[in-house]
Image (tube, rainbow, N blue to C red; front, top):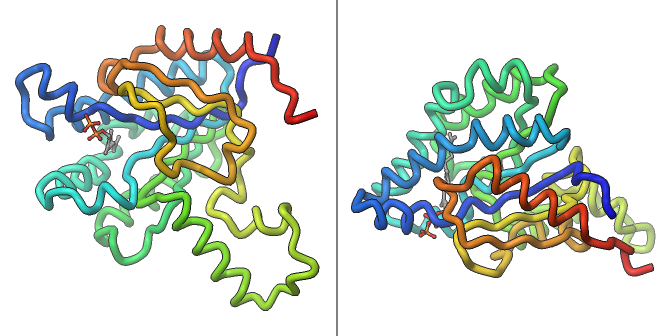
Length: 228
Ligand code: FPP
């Protein structure tokens, strides 16, 4: 038996298909997905999970229809409406991903305001992966290492990890992907090496606290030996 996972990382997939099933536009799916975060974070806190990392926007998602991307940005801008006081009291909010020029300034400001406002909260660390791609993260880390003039002979896995966006986070113990696809699509490739992988057909807006409980129950029944 395992203890409960300390760090879960979630791929919130299926928003558009969920909306389609309801006969609603794509945007409705993303809004419902954003709304779903609060109850899942609350459940994670109740379970004693200390870190939860959500893939809120991938580097690939940015290539979608302009209107859809703008809608997702508008949800980020309203982060205080979705998570405001709740997160301020309970959760430290952090961001991984490439927050450079592709993210509009006003969106960056809203997200970084949330980082600043929540820096002393300690029940859980909530991380949004924004404009995140695992290969992109590794290339950016490598550039930083080269720019720092690190001697190749001294470069270790531990040093490398300190150049990743996730340097402040423990590795995820479990990755959950909703929406039915069984792939990681470049989510935390370095960090997920020993993570348990959990796939469910439930689409993100419908993913409930009970579903998270099921995933954690499954996790506790896995044997983890880290290759030993
Ligand atoms: C994947 O579903 C989900 C996304 C591309 C975006 C996720 C973003 C949110 C839920 C917004 C969070 C924001 C805040 C501020 C709380 P999909 O569109 O790929 O769905 P599909 O697989 O059905 O096409």
